[in-house]
Image (cartoon, rainbow, N blue to C red; front, side, top):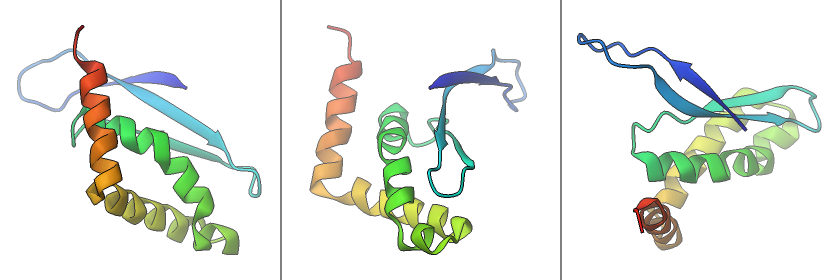
Length: 102
């Protein structure tokens, strides 16, 4: 995992936003999956998606058929379902509590 800095589009000048950059080499298609989790849903949601996106992408039926565009769509829909589940909510709470200063 690396990081990337991106400019902000706000009217007032703000420093660039530093975001984690995840790169996964796909075993079947030999193509990279690049994902930027920018925190629009909050830091905990970004962490959750970073932890689960690649796994859900590779597990999607569309990926096994070789339809990468449908696979990423399926993976994001699956992440939405996971975030709304009790287990997903518990994981989000853990990310939030882990981020609090001790």
